[in-house]
Length: 449
Image 1: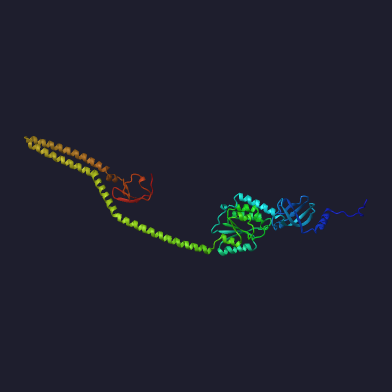
Image 2 (image 1 turned 45 degrees about the horizontal axis):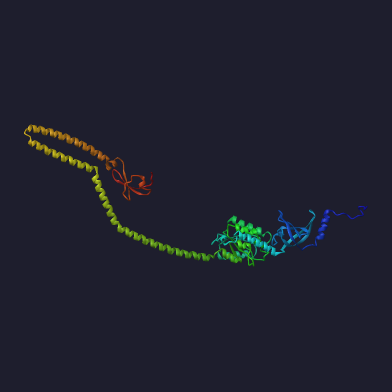
């Protein structure tokens, strides 16, 4: 049995963990090939997964800073070549492979997955020309979704402002490469639509390899472009293959310079077009004004020619109406009745004189004459009273009599028609009002049924 002072001192767990880490320290910049399994993203942005080859399995970690630099984010079932180092975590007692770079091992499989995505989108009609949105002729502002540093943003701004110096530009910085690039682009597209500061979007990058452009071949970016309310122009640089973003976008350009020229016209051309249209509009207005002036002159000439005939026609109508009114006047009827009574009185006097001349008895004739005179006088007085009574009634019932009691006759000023109800006129129509003494001219302000 060993005594404590004679045997080796035991390690603490921490000491042993540190010793293991020291022994593993040479294992850096290792290349490891394997299939990804159990990919999970932690709340801090780190990715935890396993790398396996069908026999063995090794835990792996891709820290957030390294994840932003890698070309693409590994997914379960994909085979990659990982570069990194071995480390031992004493707190968990686990050996892990710390990944700092990811490269495709089988680009063919990746392209096969890309073709499968293209087939699905094509079946949905995502590439159809009829779905493409039209670019605005002159946008309020242009949204640029690209890296905030580098030549791309400079070329875009320089091209846009050279063509239209005061055009508004809104920059949405995005990652255009790496595992976080697809989500960065998708979020920027949605934010641009929500804020509504621009009328067209330019999604740009300065080209690259198939792996470097893989973010623009992902479904999340394609869906974000399809959901965009604003038209999207892609300018991803000279590449051998068109990306999915190019296929679903509303317009495709090869370079940022081409995209800048596509989304905004030259201000000088716009001003020249406006001046030309202004001149054409002035000519058209002058020609139309001349035609209208000639038409009005001809119409005025025809009116002048027709006016005398129209006045004569109206005068004749008024003369016939006056004659008819005079014939139907109650006073004229009373005058004719008085003439008739006087004629009858004259005939009676003649008849009486004839009788008196034939009478043999002068006294009897005289008495008869007296009786006849009294009878005639009484009859004439009674007839006169009746005639006066009828005259008074006729006068009272005549238009002048009615008007003298405060009534009036209203006629349309243009046609002369007597208005018997409010339906015969309208607001702002001119009318003439005949009173017991005099006439009035007026305009209708209100009509009540």
